[in-house]
Length: 251
Image (cartoon, rainbow, N blue to C red; front, side, top):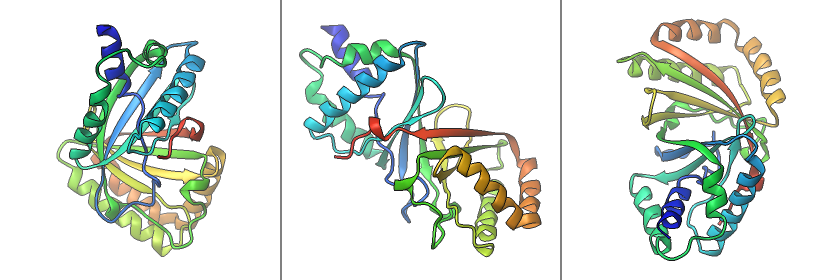
C-alpha cells in the first residue's frame, strides 16, 4: 500500500499541461512547470499506454489544467504546466490530496515502472522578448513540431542577453518575418541560467526550410546581432520536439 501511495504521488510529476500557444504569449509573464521524462529502453509502449489511462483518469476527476505532450527522439518526453504563479503548484497539490490514500489506479505501477529518470524545472515567459507577427505562417493549433533554441548566458550577463534579444524582435518585425517565437527564462532548475526560444512549425523539415529563408531575408541585420550575442553565452543547444496531442488532455 505504501508503495502505491508513493507511486501515485510520483505519477503526479510525469504528466502536465502546456500553454495553448508556445509563441502566442500573454502580456503578463506566466510561470511554467517543466517536467522532462526519460523512459526505460523498450518501455515506450507501456509508458504511453499508462499516460493515456492517466489522462482519462484526470479528465474523469476534473483535473483543472490542460495537458499536452512533446517527444524528443525515442523515449524522451516533456510535459509543461502553465501554473501562472507559484500558487498554481499548491493548486495541483490540493487536487491530488484526496487521492493520496487507498489503492492507486491501475495505471500507476506501469507508469512509474517505465520511467528511468525525470527532472523538474520552472520557466517564466518573457513576452517582451517574444515575437508575434500579425499574419503568422502557422498557428500553434496547426503545428506538429516545436524547435527549441536554448541559450545559456555566462554568469552575470542575463541583462545583456535580454537586451540583445529585444533587438532581435525589432529585426524580425522590420523584415516582416512570418514565423513567431516565444521566449521563456528559467527561474529554477539545473544548468542555469537558461533563456529559451520556442518556434512552432508544420514539421521539423518546414522549420529548417523557413529558417533558411528568414535568415536570407534578415541578412546582416540578424548576423550582426548573433555576433554581438555570442560573447555573452557559455553554450547553446537546438532541440526538435514532436507535439504528441494523442497523449494530451483538454479539460
